[in-house]
Length: 480
Image (cartoon, rainbow, N blue to C red; front, side, top):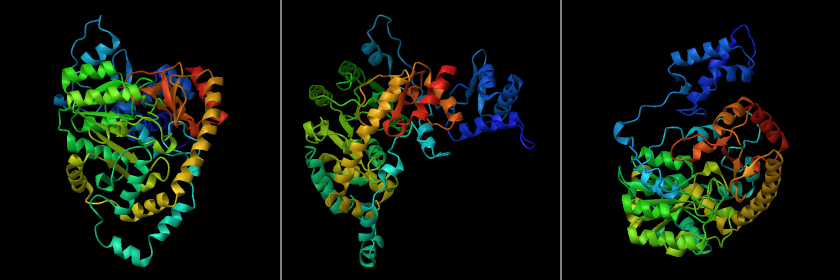
């Protein structure tokens, strides 16, 4: 709340608040600031105070004024060769065909790290609805500390800490992961598994191995903003594929294949982020048929496998790891700070993927990998995941009830960790206002290849089961 003080004027406080959020990327490039009148009403100050604050932001080069449109967070300069020029689309074309024909390639604005930066920007102890992980108290265990103690005896510590670890990762962990994948009907041997520094690192290794700048990549939309931005930073041409309840829009995929010969398709088959959709067998078979016919690989990000049913349809299980690459991790279910991920790949790609890992990291932390293997082998991780699933089911029921009570609806049936919620207002603007009262939202624009206004937001069911958040949310939404 802004207050008059002897040391900082209201203008300085307001300008400082916006500046801090811009520099920390909580306000992403291209975001429109509230109008002078709106900001004055929201902050309880005079319009002249807002004008003076915006002038300070202009002088600092943090925002730009656009005639008759307002003030916007300044965009970073875009390299001309990476800026795609869409092909004109006939107005009579269908929605799916327009999506396939209209995108020669999609350039992603530099805004996708806003939510991630917010995850490290904890300024209070309120449950944060936009967070992408379980609350820390959900993840507290005793077995993790016990596992680390077991592998840090003097003898063992010297054995594997005073030299580089195995290039592909700890052999014991890779064997445990192979058995775990077998339970999901994914036929991987330990010799097909490579450990990584989290699942995002695994996705990056796949991209750097299989793609070159200028290649076309199909990615589900809505989807995880970091994947869009990461591929864009590597110079890839992104082809957004609408995600439906049964799976990706196959008509759009087929058109992309005919027009652009994409090299890769990135998919979250189970508990898709942010919709919660799960792939159906029929859709999975058709995706694999397209991959075989048009010679592209599929990377399947199974980040939410620990809270999903084992019988859920997975592309890697149906394909047998021929054109597919399986990516998984443990940050969501066990310990975000441990940063252990992995991939299971076709034998023909294994050495190429391993070379890319070695060029980037040389090795991965053997100590934590050995500790994780113990957690898996002793059944500790399985029992922990079962407890989390039960807790999540209860939280989801409470969160859904509160959302519906406060006049929201769900754009997809609630499932998994996230809900895809229709709010009825622009969620970029809503997110700015909610930041003022200490809540970090995940506005719908973050989940699209190109930032565009959206009335949707992603909520974390584990952090939105308290009535206080929804009361504040309803009050601020009404003010908009």
